[in-house]
Image 1 (tube, rainbow, N blue to C red):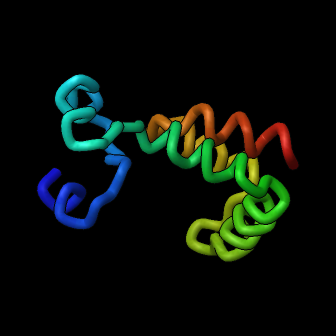
Image 2 (cartoon, rainbow, N blue to C red; image 1 turned 30 degrees about the vertical axis):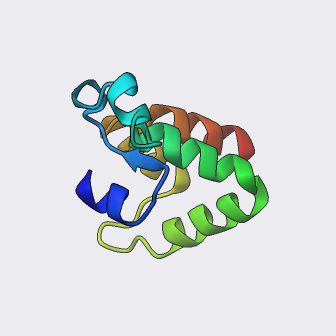
Length: 91
């Protein structure tokens, strides 16, 4: 959090949302988002570009090779369910 304050950030990305109460963060001009929310918001800024980047990531998966749906399943397993669902709806 010190780094966020020092750099005048307005957002902290964390999966420990409960450790960062909104009222406390607001005193520093900060909000907290989960990684899944942050990634989903980023995808939403430019869905076409995000899908291109995702498909490039998938095409580079060689060890082991995976298709897009397998990668999306892995996203879901690590808690990126909204991001995976959003990407899935775009491909």
